[in-house]
Amino acid sequence: KWGLLRNKLLKAIGRNNYTTWIEPLEFKELQDGVAVFSVPTNFMGNYVSQNFADLILYELNTAGETVQRLDFRVAANSPARPKPAVDTPPVAKPEPVAAPSEDPAQDTLESLQAAPLDSRFTFDSFVVGKPNELAHAAARRVSEGGPVTFNPLVLYGGVGLGKTHLMHAIAWELKTKHPGLNVLYLSAEQFMYRFVQALRERRMMDFKHLFRSVDVLMVDDVQFIAGKDSTQEEFFHTFNALVDQNKQIIISADRAPGEIKDLEDRVKSRLQCGLVVDLHPTDYELRLGILQNKVQQYSSSYPDLAIADGVLEFLAHRISTNVRVLEGALTRLFAFASLVGREIDMELTQDCLADVLRASERKITVEEIQRKVSEYYNIRLSDIIGPKRLRSYARPRQVAMYLCKQLTSRSLPEIGRRFGGRDHTTVMHGVKRIEELKLTDGQIAEDVEMLRRSLEA
Ligand code: ADP
Ligand code: MG
Image 1 (cartoon, protein in one colour):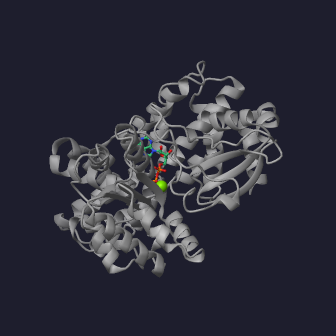
Image 2: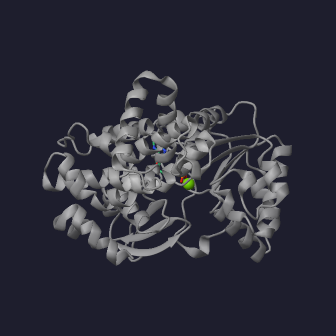
Image 3: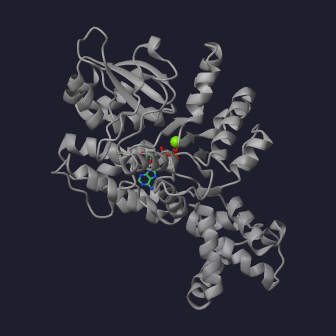
């Protein structure tokens, strides 16, 4: 896929940048969500990672790969020592985090004990809004490193909502505040990998010792071990041993523990023992906040760039809940605008993000509206579509018509047809009636707003 992506990058950053920075990159492998590239020099690796990493990450992820991080390594025949691109601590320099080893022979239990932390994922860069405020508060509390209050802390939520970001932020905070603390962050996949490796090398004692001597254990994407029986078993024992010693455990998952298929019941119930908080899908305000925050971060690297009024609002409105997609879109916009030396206005935005905007467009259907409205008012679907004139059916029907007019591109006659073959004037009357009532009847206004929100979610 790298070949295809290179084309996209070429378009996004232009021929010059492309030839200088992207062409010399050689894609090596994709493992555990880390895409590894070899670069001729350290300088190049750093430059690319500072300037194009977001863009590359974004393109990889929109092409269907799941990539969390890029790693640029200096080609083996070069004398310079490779260095992981993003693994630099944000503030004070805490103990070095084990970097991924370049030499497979060094992949021992010791050298691989922690996954690298992304220096951008701190509390400072985390934007708090309604959908994530609880998760954020819980993460903050745990990151103080005081007496263990809830154990484990489980953060769950959909892709790209900030679970990994929060976990890294906790780890950074703990490492800064308590440098002596042994904090171990890794993905469930890495946990399994290490477990299997220990089995193979007959080093289970080392493995157990390693995992049981940490002060804080963080396992990201725990759903990964579902259905992997021996790994689950080992996880279960590790978990219990740490809780018995009153050590903090922090877990993330893509859904509530009770809903993870093929996860053993005893593991589920352990996960539910502490505090379970979810990250809700982002709402408009949070998306806008994240965009504004990003723009501020960018403004140091692109001092001349201007954004027209309304562009961020437009993006926050139009792009889905996944923050990774949102950030990627902005990165591409910046790269594009700085290349062509133009202000980021609506026209440039539409041009540059046509594919993203198209992909995130969710079409609401008349049927969906009718179903939601009937559920909401607790009446049958046939009563909404059917001929009954009773007020308890007529009003919901008008609400449904109004929403169809607002949220779909259907014409009045088309809407009428889907409401049991009614005339377009009936639909028009219904729409008008609701428009009036919205101003005078608080209940109706609220109903419409609730329905709209649930349809647009
Ligand atoms: P998850 O692990 O839930 O799939 P991540 O933590 O990897 O999601 O987040 C995806 C991207 O979105 C990251 O670049 C992260 O920094 C960013 N992000 C998510 N939520 C926020 C937020 N509230 N504030 C700032 N950035 C966020
Ligand atoms: Mg994650």
